[in-house]
Image (cartoon, rainbow, N blue to C red; front, side, top):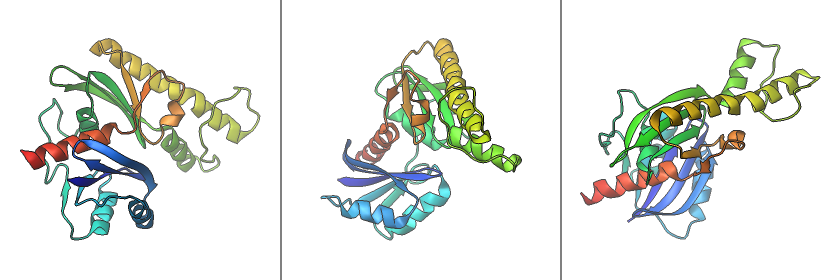
Length: 232
């Protein structure tokens, strides 16, 4: 069966087509139904079912409404998650990303927040992790708390900045990767897992971090859950 997978984040919606366990198409799209329709119209196959990962419940509801009365299932409601060592309140997106792994790893998901989680064992189990603010939301929060400062896009450069915008942007560009690197190293040391996997819409801000890039991680987990529960 061809399924439409939807990973609903706070600022983007990731859509993918999956034939069983195989993902055949993928896009990170703005939170606009018109963009979802345009992308789906470009595909050569038509999905029969929508499978939702409701990271941001508001956008998940919008995707469900956009899909209409066609078959759909939602992770955590229609599809229950297996016991993988999660604690109460652990984000569904973090669990599903772990289910997309094929071997132990520390997952770094750079979204609105940057989450880090260590996965090990046979079968893989969630050992624990950390949550840090994302680079973009850090800038936005500072601008909201101090109106004289503007929200900026993080970038790397000389520390000898002579504008407020430059001082903010470069401080974030240099400091945010250092924060995440320190967190990742601590997780790797305590868990004994050296493999780092980087995913998420703001992963480019961590380009200097030595890690594998995998934008399909959560979508693979989503495809596996949808397939296994449909054929059980």
